[in-house]
Image 1 (cartoon, rainbow, N blue to C red):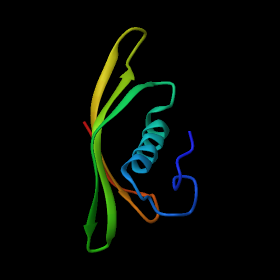
Image 2 (image 1 turned 60 degrees about the vertical axis):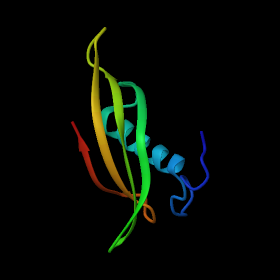
Image 3 (image 1 turned 180 degrees about the vertical axis):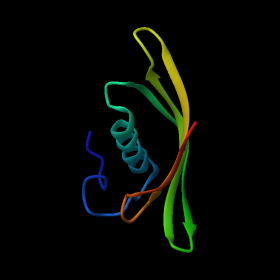
Length: 91
């Protein structure tokens, strides 16, 4: 799925593009085959001293064994210009 702005060198313009970037970060961290579902409960653009950031939070459902699942809550902060992770928390 290609979303405008995610694979180009432009900044992240909307919440959907920010969610795609965060989903890629989660897939890199936990492995694409281990993730069952990612749901976002909040994604908003926040301005700070050092620029604009996308803050998003939600839940990730992952495989934890052959038949069990594990649910973790996450919060991410992504720089809208460089698409780099500024901070994250997974609990």
